[in-house]
Length: 301
Image (cartoon, rainbow, N blue to C red; front, side):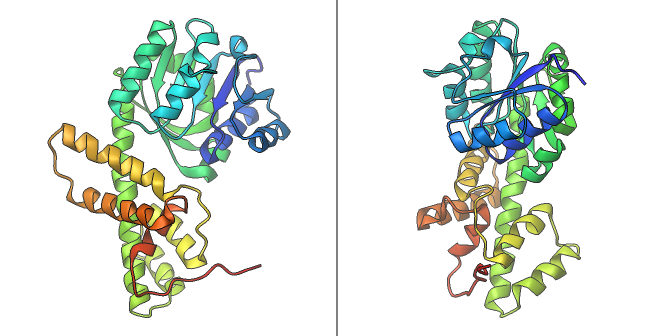
C-alpha cells in the first residue's frame, strides 16, 4: 500500500468512477475531475483526497493522471483546453490516456505531451462498469517501459490484465479499435437474433435463457440482450458511442484498404438507430430499428 502516490482520474463516467474507486481502495491518494458536481460529490463520499471541475489546484501534487473521457476531443480539452491540466503537471508525470480514439489522435496527443516534458501511455480499457469498480478491467497499452513502471501502482489498482502491446503510441488504440469491431458486431448480431425471435413469437426471456446456456452466446449478448428482455434502455454505454467506435473501425480499415463487411453492416445499424432518435439510449436499443415486432416494456416497480 502506497499512501504517498497521488493520481487524478479525469472523467467520472461508469468506467472512470470505477477506476477512481479502485485507486482509493488500493490506498492511492485519489483525485477526481469531472464537470458533473453530483459525480464529484459521490467520489468525495467514497474517500477521494480531492475533487474539482479541473485539476489546477492539485496538479502539482500528482504522480499520475488517468484520462477516461469519451473521445479524443474531450481528451484534448481535458489536457490542453482552457482549464487543461497538462501545463500544471510536474515534468515527467505519466499521463494514461484511456479514451477510445484513432492511433493518429493518440500520436498527436503524445506529441503535445512530449513538448510539455510529460510522458504518455496509450492505454484503452475494456470490461464495463462492474469490472471497473472491482479493479478488474483489461488494459491494452503501448508506451515506453519507463511509463509502464511509473504507472504501476495505478495499473495494479484498476486492472486484472495489462497487455503491453509495444513501445509505439497508437498500438494500444489500434488493438482497442479491433476489439470494438467485435463488441459492436456482437451487439448488432444479438439484436438481430432477438428481433427475429420476437417476430416468431418466441418469448424473449426464453430465447435469452437458451442462448446464454448454448454455443451461440457471447459476453455482449449475455450483457446487452438482458437489457432488451428487461425493457430497460438506461444508457450504460450509448448507441452513439458505437456510432463513434465503429466509425473509428471503418476509418482504420479505410487507411489499410481493408474490407470489413460485418463491421460495416453493424455501423449502419447503429447509425440508423441514432438517426431514429435512440442515440442517447443504451446500445442494446439498436434492436429498435426492426419494425413489426413487440419488445418487452420496463416493469414499473
